[in-house]
Each structure stands twice: as C-alpha cells, then as structure tokens.
Length: 198
Image 1 (spheres, one colour):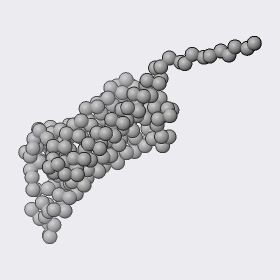
Image 2 (cartoon, helix red, strand yellow):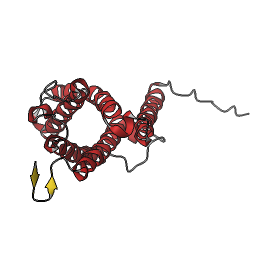
Image 3 (cartoon, helix red, strand yellow):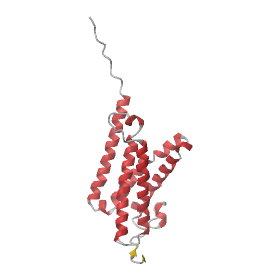
Image 4 (spheres, helix red, strand yellow):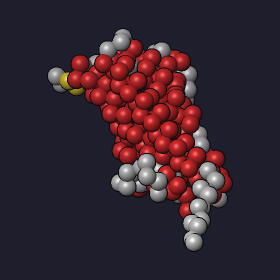
C-alpha cells in the first residue's frame, strides 16, 4: 500500500520503528532505575545524586511512553509484517511472532496502567496505588525480553545486544544502591565511646 511515493512498508518506516523501540526501551530502563532507587531514604543517602528525584522519574516515564506509542503505531502501520491493530492492547493478537510481540503488549499495558494511576494518585487509596506500582517489576522484564528477542539489533547479536546488557547493568547498580541504603538504615547505631578524664 502506498500514498504517493511513500510506501507503508518503506525502509524509512522500519527505521522509525527500530529507533522508537530503542529510545523507548532506554527511557523505560532509566525511569525504572530512578524509581527503584529514588525513594526518600535513597535520595538522602550518600550514594545517590541530588538531581535524581521522583519528578525526574515521572518525566522520563512520560517521555518513554511517548516513544513506545510511536513504536507501536509505526509497527502496526508497517505492512511488511502483519501485527494487527488489536495487538497493541491484546496479548496474543499479533499474527507476527505472537509470543514475542505479546511480551511487548503486556509491558505496554502495565506501563499505561502504572502511569495513568500515578497521574491520579491523589485520588486513590495509597495501598492500591502502591500495589499497582509494584507491577513495574513485571513490566521491565517483559520489555527486556521483547526487545532482546524481537528487535533485529539485539536478536542477531548486534550492538543492540550490548545495549540490552547495559540496561540490565544499570538496573543492577540501582538495585545495589537501594540495598546499600536499606542496609545502612537497618544497621544498629555505632556505640558511642565515652572519653576518660583524669
């Protein structure tokens, strides 16, 4: 199918799909790392930079969502493979690499749920918001394996594979920072030494 000289299966569209997937995945990883480590106790620790706030975490998440939506739209419009319009919200609706695409679909569904409920957080019971926010621990692995197994840059052992491992390393560092802070918080206070005066 084409409109004038522009084909819906053109290489340009394929590059848009790849680029938005890469940028969206990196932003999602950064947002998850910021959210993982930028709790109040971590931000007040000596391990965490002052600029990494919850506000930055939310902004990066929103920007990542925008790139993910562009990735989804360019994938659906591309006639080179048949993914199907419903596959962006319904898992296993894709006619192309059904399981691999479905991991991305589930990741998007969870991402949308977390962002929407965070925007109305003040109108929700905190316990419910927190429980929904914990689903991000499911979101990132789904996005990780979707990118690793579906994307051509990662699936064929190209530089995308190193990017995938780099994102995993970043989250490992964020997890370590949180663990160090938690350990410091739970550690018993150091005994005070009382000086002896003659």
